[in-house]
Length: 159
Ligand code: FES
Image (tube, rainbow, N blue to C red; front, side, top):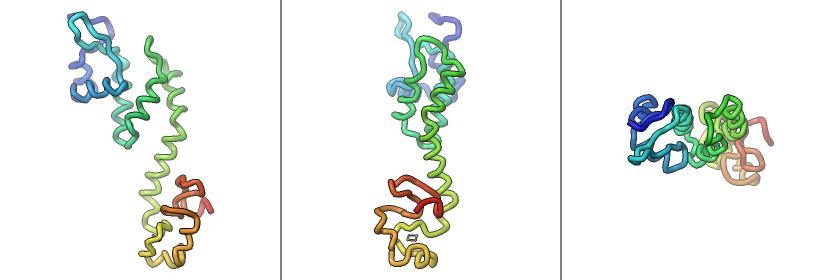
């Protein structure tokens, strides 16, 4: 078998990562993972591809679009195994985006028990928190969850 030390076949990558071979092929078409082709046109993956696949799976679980994941993974070197410093650098790159997503999830978990200022006036608290939908003057959406630029914030933390 044409395989170099530290390389994995697609079957081995699938078995170790828990991701179906068809999904791995899809990841490759999306530029999320890379392979070399043997003379018999079989794929061979460097072992650090397992770490890339793990990142993709976790990102998918929390709803990060694959295009964003691909853009981040493109920052990793292709000609050598990424170092810890490489991974730290890409972690920093999308920290702000992940923080924004975490905030959205926290809002979903914590803030939807109260008036969100969306204009529905359907809760007994709405008459106090958003009388006559006064928050509509600040723009569309759940104004008690957003800042003036339409970004998420917690009630009481923004105007
Ligand atoms: S929850 Fe919609 S306006 Fe209060």
